[in-house]
Length: 211
Image 1: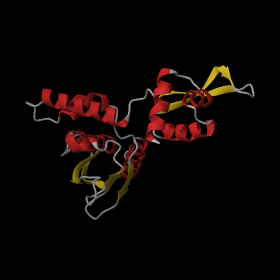
Image 2: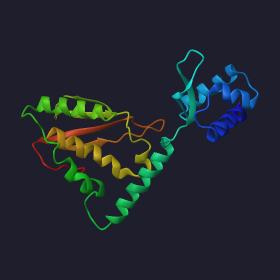
Image 3: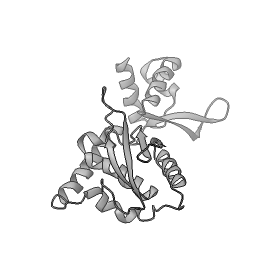
């Protein structure tokens, strides 16, 4: 199976915008066999399915062709992010300020509360974090609201570059107008907490414990 898919990938690499029939003829396999393997390769993100206007199918519509996926893999993106964060941290090692928040602070200057209502500010903050890929909500506690984040979109970056975790607290403080303290950090490895918890300390603060 793997050998067949490797052969298909090799053929597509050498013949971009080929059809399933082209691949089958070259590898002496049926079109049905080729489509089985192609569906797996598409799901894995290794190839892209493209309608080629210059090639028509039997019904006159553009033929479905395939090419190698040029989008960087998740592994490559994680490697690049780790490299960049480590470089930024190394350049800022003599500073007591978190290097990422120091670098990005000017770009987050517009993230200020748009309403005086604490509840509305928290709701707006939660919706903004959901837009970034988090599962987020907040709960009312006796000592004050607690913001809860899960489904970390950066994972597994925090394992090797924990500085990136402080960005969560920085963003939450900027958007909510509350000073926050992170009281739990998520670790998606088995047996560890799956959520990050941020306890509100006081409203209206410009800086917080994690910046």
